[in-house]
Image (cartoon, one colour):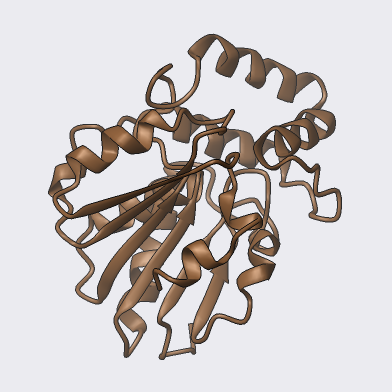
Length: 225
């Protein structure tokens, strides 16, 4: 990473790409990362994906000459938390949009029965399942955003849904901002309510939006960074 004046790092959610942040592309000194097997980040290790990627993000933060704010949406928010748990010295704050500390939980994430059915649907018809998921999350299929690589993205998603961070949140000392839409049909907004009570220094912002409140109001994030 040659850019040494990074102040903001954005990480998108599963099945999308860094293009989802286009309303924030003008944010100064920012980079927009693609998750493994998404966007331009197609070739990636297919084991311990989240651990490896959060270590990559850590390295990017440490290479910056500036303090960095880390912004993540959905699975990207989980990457932010995993990175913050590694205690990077230059990490200033994290902003978590639609975060779940334990996805396989009806209150803190999504109904496990539906999650299992979703994985079966991905195997049967990957394209339509992904596009329908995008619409559930955002209200649009975003057909202009390329589909993720099938096998790798499914492995990444499986790591995510099997993760339980509920007992780790209290280890994070830096400021944490949680943004969650109360009409979110992917992750129960109570997940962010719970997380705000576990982090040592958290602020909770609830909106009347779906899983992607920043699409209608990019100022939600812009004001915090």
